[in-house]
Figure (cartoon, rainbow, N blue to C red):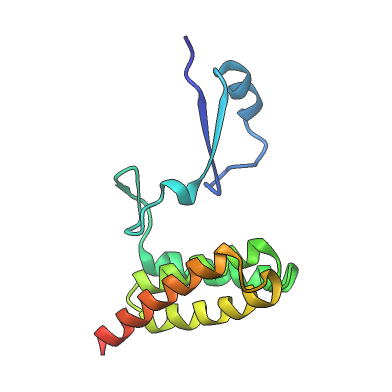
Length: 138
């Protein structure tokens, strides 16, 4: 019996033309997961260290700049990257920067999604957390 093939979207090489069609054909089904679902806040993927928080923040900063230019601030992918940038900044030791990012994102969410959207509740919760971390750091 064959095992299902796990494809991590957002992983290096994901979505590029590879042997993927042949692997899918040979596997017993396909399970697609976002890499962020498995990537822990400390930069480990299934217990293996793959990222440093400062590097993650830098990478998301560059990605966000490109997405703002190409898609604009209202695009869902841009907003996800903005949220991820805030999280990585906070984990890299800049909780005030994380809070500032989340404040900007909250304004964008209100404009695009309205005040009752679940993303606003989650963003507010994260904003409270990073503000408290920034206060504790002082």
